[in-house]
Image 1 (tube, one colour):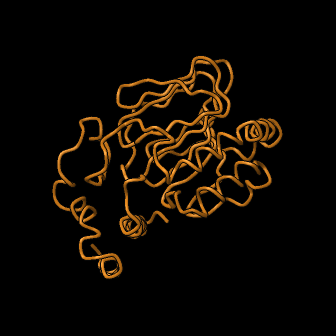
Image 2: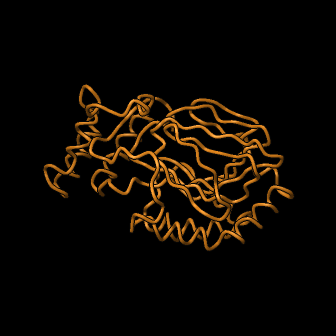
Image 3: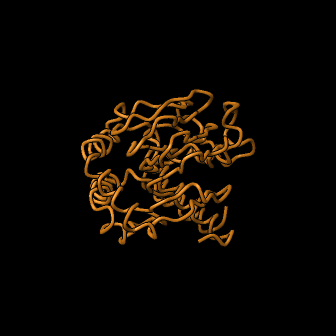
Length: 251
């Protein structure tokens, strides 16, 4: 812990209570917060006390249900705008740079990155941008440590099994354009996207995806705070990860 982290954590405890960061402290202690599911072993941080559930029901959490409903309701417009962007503004897409790798057959169009909305995307995909701003950014349900982007897997592309860095955010997928032959596997269970509907899963569990179809597969991915985290924990986690990234020279 750097002095900056210590001071920030002390201020959060002063506001939210002495025990408000106990789970974060356990996560940082030797042993990383205690036992974890075998299929979470590749994750760097596991905040203890969060439900060890790979798949979540998108409408199960009052905090997240509004953004799920808004995205699903807006799906027809979102899909139309995505198709226009893919056809007419391909330069807006880039190779997706996962922390593990970079893939040319995995394209991304960013709406939110580095803790802010990507203003250029407002003109390219205005409906998705508006829904994201109103229902995820302004409500502070989006995790500012991560991002929101259209994720396009080209035909034949696959994403190798991997765990993401932590369990305190959760991944929402709106299925925008889904050809036959696509699937996503989380903790050994494979599901298919249903166009116009959302999937919600904990990506600290090992997961993989593939496009066995004949056209690109596109989902809108939104990294949201895990609904079982508290406001105090979220503040502390932003301080922690931001400081680690600064010390590592990554932003």
